[in-house]
Amino acid sequence: MLVFDLDDTLYLERDFAFSGYACAGEWVQEQFGLKGFGQHCRNLFEEGERRHIFNRACEAVGLEADQDMIARLVDVYRNHPPTIQLCDDVLRFFARVQGPFGLITDGPERMQRNKVSALGLEAHLAHICPTGAWPQGYGKPHPRAYELMEDAATPGMQMVYVADNPAKDFVTPKARGWMTVQIDRPGRVHAPEAPDELHAADCVIESFDELDAVLAG
Image (cartoon, rainbow, N blue to C red):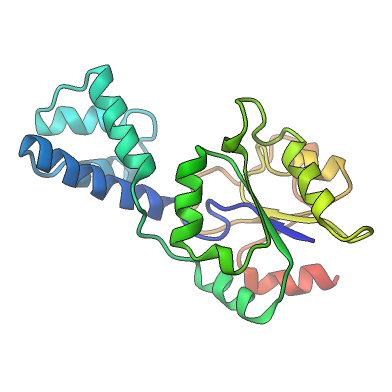
């Protein structure tokens, strides 16, 4: 059974970030009458900032970045209805290949399910596993989600995981005998280099247009 990661695998994670920053900017303008917050966030992201975007954007527009404010902004960001779309190569793949397919994705459950809904993935995925539905500690590389996918698959079916982040995505399915495929998209968020051989995928592709040949080989 073919199982996918979500962020930077089926769509570009940066698009969710830009959508969230725009929504946060609208919220700041509605609540405080301050313009430009969302654009400041986007500019900081594009400059490489990841850890303190909201703090620095608050400073730029003159908003006090106390703990409560940052928590409110994070809530708006995580729970907004995202404006995102599947990558073109993913759309082509779903148009020519039939499932069943699965999905394993980390992150807060509501945020990830909002992404799944915005992308229309319910039409393509038979088994959706957001690890954020479980207590902390069950995200990748914990084996629980992979075990669930194995249970859902037809006995004897080859398990394949397609994902982007070698820091956590491949070490567990490789150890369980899955085939692992890394998608290395331009515009990805995470570094594509594996920390060691155990974490490295069996093969690396740049587009789902290459996936048919990998699966056939």
